[in-house]
Image (cartoon, rainbow, N blue to C red; front, side, top):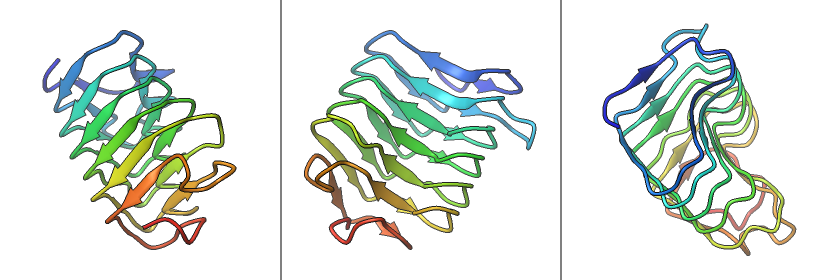
Length: 159
């Protein structure tokens, strides 16, 4: 799917539960009355999200629970919840994403039994919570945080 605009839905802008999709230019939400939930729910595996924007959703910008997903040069700002939320997903890559001016955390790796993940060359600034947050029992043990530009982090091992 290319260059899709999705606005004013009650639950999610886009829910991807299938595997191996590529999205270019997906834009979700366009006003303070954007989607009534998450901009993008990514439950399927082996998907690529490229050059997409997820804005002004009432919950998260992007929620990732599927394995082996790759998000590059995408932004999520400003949303009412945390922006890029990695829940139970393994082997996730966030490459050059922007998560600024959101109401909770910018990029959040929730505490779970996830394995493998790479967040690099990304920007997270001026979020109400932490800009970068790794809540795993051993922070930075499951995720690598490399060369990111941010203001605050919940652990000193985050780079």
